[in-house]
Amino acid sequence: TLRALTTGRNVRRVVLLTALTATAAQLVFEFGPLWLVAAHAPAALYGPYWAALVSTVGLGAWLASRVPLHRRGGAAVAGAALLTATVLPAVSHVLAVVIAAQILIALALAMIGVRAGFLLHEAVSATVRAGVSSGASTLAWLAFLPASLVFGAITRTHGVDVAGWLIVVIVALLGALLIRSTDRQPGT
Image 1: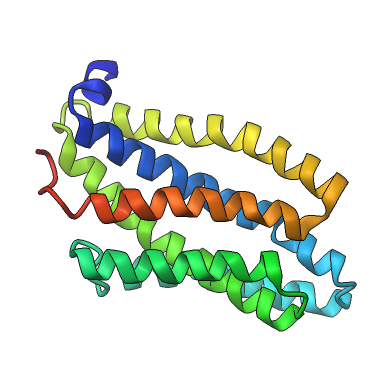
Image 2 (image 1 turned 90 degrees about the vertical axis):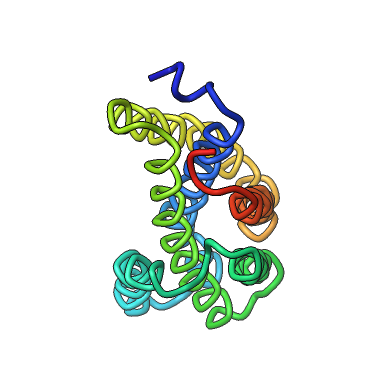
């Protein structure tokens, strides 16, 4: 499995895309509610907020087959929309804007996650596919741990808005990888 992960540059890029997408999604799901806390949102808003955020996983998976992320233009539009959405919670103090942006972020990440999973499965042989997928998942958790510590430290000292820029940086990297994934056919 390690050999499969390191054989080609394309495989490494796809593993990194998969891990960054999962890390960004986990940051939104774990720390997104902090924006509601910072805005002193009413308790009654948390349930609908969480339901909307979680529903993006299924909707994003459904949309993944309908949005042309395999084409440079589709990947660029999705990456730009995702990047724009991640900037909004870092700069806006309007709770409705922050919530709408987080829902869009989670939706786009779900779509990209499905595409990244497809690319990962296409990039390696069936004999090592499960191991490589497990390795990518492990990498995502290994990336999430320090990212969450950094996010928490920034939030504690500068506030959640400033910490939101960490998600912007991660999304910028994964957007570039998503666009780059359209350069070659999977497995090359």
